[in-house]
Every structure is written in structure tokens, then in C-alpha cells.
Image (cartoon, rainbow, N blue to C red; front, side, top):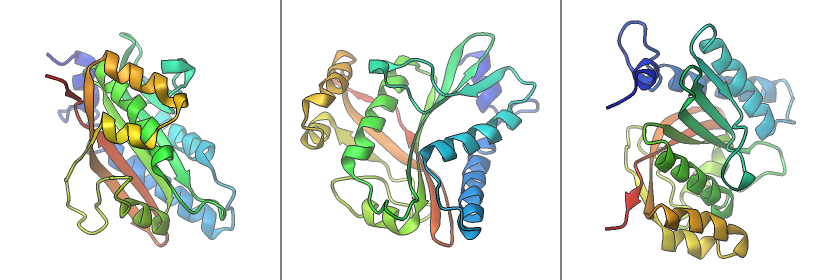
Amino acid sequence: MKSEAYKLLFGSNEGQFNFNENIHANTASRILSYLVFNLTEGFSDINEASIQTEFNRFLRIKFNNSSFTCSIEPIAFGQKRLDYLIRHVPTHEHLVFYEFKTVIKSNENSITERMVFPDLIKLALKKHDHSDCHSYFMLAGKTSVFKEAIKNEGLRLPNKFENKYSRDKTVLSIEQLRQVLNNETFNDHFNELENRHIKKISISPSRWKHFESMSVLFFKMNNNIYKD
């Protein structure tokens, strides 16, 4: 049974936040507007921390005088914090997790599997440990870079550029992840997946917003796929 906090955040009845359809979509629009405005004005020194700050500013307004709070995660797996979380203050229930990646500056012209897969693993672990949570991976920045990256068969991200209504999901096996993250630096990541018997990670496209040369892409983590 879903908790009362879950129903309050994700529900669409009167007095509920309707997070999926309302706040989440508006957040994507807000980040895109921030990118376009600053780049139009010549303010190109925008990085992941800048996006995180704007993201936080917007959601704090939405949750003002509510029982929810949002922040950078204080502690996390392997001492590597997730970029952002939303939790219910009275019950300490963690309900939404985010990881961000940005490609905005003039010298940022690619996004690779090694930049993306560790974040997806961290989100999958959170999805396992907090059964009712929602986990999202966000890309913000140059549309041209993202279009090129998503064509990359190695990256395997779902693609809504060609069909904006697509809900096609991508499933990544541990074996596929290991082929890319073939370095002892990531051993702890795989140990944690195996300890939880997570065999595959599944992601779907969520909200995608574009304007001129900028895009904001959200991917939603689906339920993890476990061993028999």
C-alpha cells in the first residue's frame, strides 16, 4: 500500500501535488527557459551546479509551506551523494531522486556512457532501497550533442527526438554496464547491484523540452529487473 506522503505528492486529487504531470513538466520548462535566457544574454558560464541551483529555487517555491522539502542528498552510497532529493519532512520518507548531467559550455561537446551509467546505477540502487520512490536522470544543454549521443548504440538511451510521443524503454544488463565501466573504480557499484540481486536497469523517456539549440531531457527509472 502506498504511503500517505506518496499519495499527497503524486496524487491528482484536490489538495494533492500531482507531481508527475504538473511539477515535473514545469520544472523541465523552467530549466530550459533559464538556459535559453542566459545564453541569449551571453552568460555562457553555466555548469551542473548552476542548473542544480535553479532547479532547487523552483522546487522550493513549489513546496513552500508544505510538508515536503528538497535538497542535495546529505549522505549516500559510497559517500557519493545523489544530486537531488525530495522528501516528506514528518516521516523522513525519500520520494524523488535526481541525477543531473550538463553539456553547455563551448568546450563540452560530448556525453559518453562512462558519464551516464554510474548515475543510472546509483538511481537504480535508490529505486531498490526506497520502493515507492521515483528516480530521474536529467540531461540539460546542447540539443546537437544529445541527438548525436542518443544515436550512439553504446549509450542506449531512449529516443524521443524522432517521435515525441515515444514511451519506448531501454533495458541495460549488468553485463552491458560492465563492458563500459571496466575499471576497478566501479567495483563497488556492481557489488551493490549484485547484493540486491538487480540483474538489469530499465529506463524510459519522461519529459523532454526543446527550444532553439537547447534541450532538457528527463529519463525515468522503471522498476529494477531481478534475478530469478
